Image 1: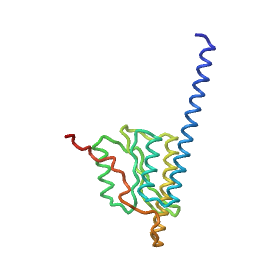
Image 2: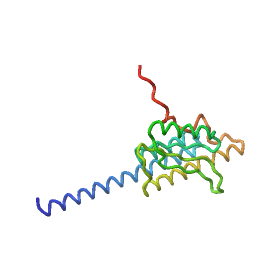
Image 3: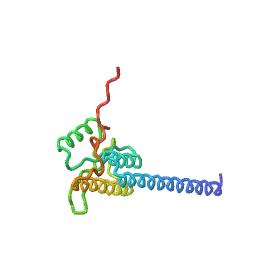
Image 4: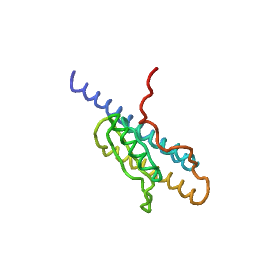
Length: 169
């Protein structure tokens, strides 16, 4: 090998990295557009919030996220944390979902199988998901106050990813 071979390989790696980054950006934009369309179409709130969590989980990888509403029972949130610990999951990130007027709308919780903190890039993704969740929940609350059906609720908002596995028969 000579010095020219490694230069070609480095440029090839740079192109691949740039292409991967472009693909990631394209996925993020597409996912965000789909979520915004779901919100504007007044899709059921659990569906919208589950879509936000799924997009976040896919982009960060190795995490399980959920969004609980401020109206959800505090015991449910404690039970989820307990189940997460039983499965060896660690709190990756947790923060309230807050409206512009500082009203607490819910909570975004994320768990990981590895004890670590989010990177700067991951915090940016979390912030975007946080904003989308706040928009969806706020629209639902406004529709409820106006007596409209708004974004229809059709069941629990939280995903059941932390349920114990069924025994094999």
